[in-house]
Length: 183
Image 1 (cartoon, one colour):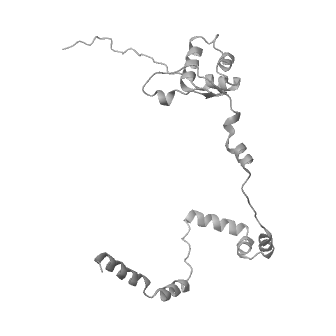
Image 2 (cartoon, one colour):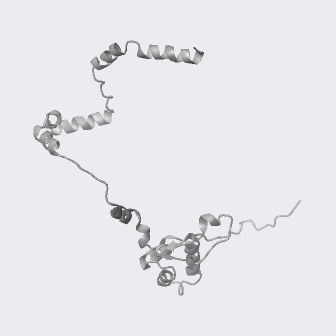
Image 3 (tube, one colour):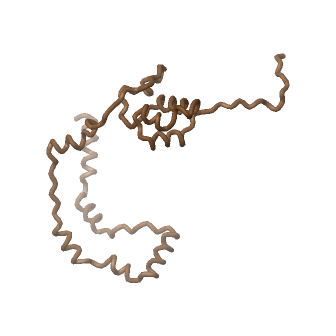
């Protein structure tokens, strides 16, 4: 017999030793008590019981009518047919796509470039371009023109123009206008 086998057999002997007595001892124990309530929860519970004293009796009382109704409940389920599954799990068949108006060449192009954009959606580079165009010439690039250009709803393009503002760089001249010289 190898050492590893011998260790396993010794462990098994101790594990199976007096199993029946240990099981009876555990079954015979009182049920564990609940953890004590937080003082604020205890106050809230006391307030409810003071306001409605019959609640405590009602909660702990056995309701035979409810139990009989629960026994009558029978749930039978079956898998839906394959046609129903296809209709539920393949909603992408009904979505129309458009090609992007703008693409970005960069190291992160896999994250930014999208080949097909669902109608009613806009990619990040397109949104930045639309915001920039609106900022430069708001009389030409109105919400309606942006909506028609990128196949958006007018309310979405209005929200885009209202809530998203492109970055604006402001250079504030220093208060001290002395020129910095090299030493």
